[in-house]
Length: 264
Image (tube, rainbow, N blue to C red; front, side):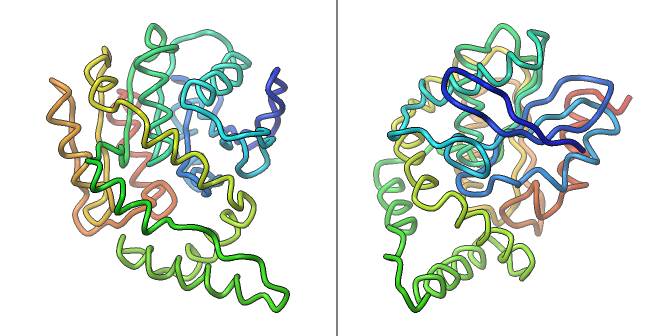
């Protein structure tokens, strides 16, 4: 695996890359979880050329000076993708990353996208969005005694438990990634919640795979979304929680590679 930066007119975008042959695959992470595909890349690299980006403001990518719209995120990602050439590509994303993939595949990269893999698309009612906002909330104010860190840790424990994730290593990893992004991880949710998900889903013109864990917080959303995309494939992984690419990296890679026909 190698890491690097793409220089764009919008600043630097950090990436992880692995694989020397096979289809080109671009991966987009959940908000605040910038290294989400790091464990998955070695498995994907056996059969494809995979690149995982840090969302602007997350991980080691430059932060924008103000919150971005979905179109502005897309422009930054297209600039980063073009660094790797203009060939056909597969797009895969989880939660916030799935929203980015949906916009790219339905609009600016529609002619180049061969397959789409979505995990946790935000096809939500106004009431569901309000409920998610109440859970996401605001970050606790920074305290000199560090008590805000404990509050953040306890909040992660509760949220992850609801998604079937109780592994301490994963909790610690998520805490570190979240601290890197700080409040910038929250700013992307405005772009996600403003997206016309139904309209974008209906524009998709390539094979689509909804791949999600049974206990993922957006599993029901994926089920509804799959019903809107004729010919799409839906796989709800029994007994599996959220953060699928990080929690089950080999399984995630196997499903993605099988869907795009890279295992044959």
